[in-house]
Length: 202
Ligand SMILES: Nc1ncnc2c1ncn2[C@@H]1O[C@H](COP(=O)(O)OP(=O)(O)OP(=O)(O)O)[C@@H](O)[C@H]1O
Image 1 (tube, rainbow, N blue to C red):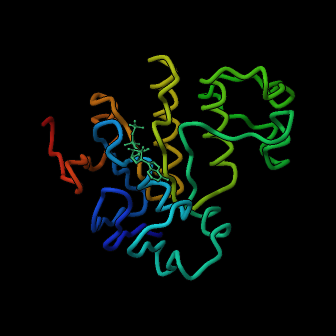
Image 2 (image 1 turned 90 degrees about the horizontal axis):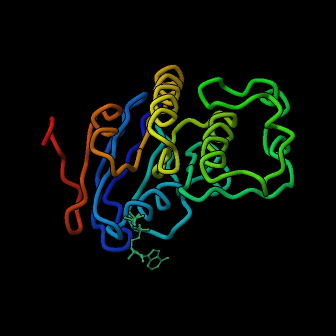
């Protein structure tokens, strides 16, 4: 059981962010457009230079090569990147026959070309690809932004079940207040250069 801890992290206009996300806990992060939500996730994923320290359990980000860190602390960005022609080539062999039902795909999806994917299909497959790599922590940047309401609910439910089962600490950037109320154990909102806790239905 591993927590994700930020100590005095500064990136862009955000200063001295301190945060401890427990195993299996979902902390939602909201804030105005351009306030620094994505940059904070990128800093935690060691994709952007920043000040301060980030820990996964006892392991400090600065003590491991960035590519090892990123396999453990997995960022699912709003715009996912794909580098092979076919979907299946991006997945470990063992996962190709087990596409989760909640994502709404038939197994044939593994033979689809990347170029035909809609933005919502890309987003759902990027989530499955991230989980298929069995990370220890997840950083989700508006993971359902391109999905319709029903699919959004199904994906949320699937994600929450996976998060609880695997006991991953999760930072989840979201705009939709209703979604935040459904998924968040805690909600932090960016105000100026800091994160402020939002309680209940504020
Ligand atoms: N590498 C960079 N160097 C300098 N400024 C950057 C860099 N990347 C992003 N920015 C700026 O930092 C600010 C925060 O960007 P960020 O992408 O984190 O916003 P956000 O809160 O995720 O916004 P949105 O909700 O619109 O996605 C923006 O003004 C952006 O232009």
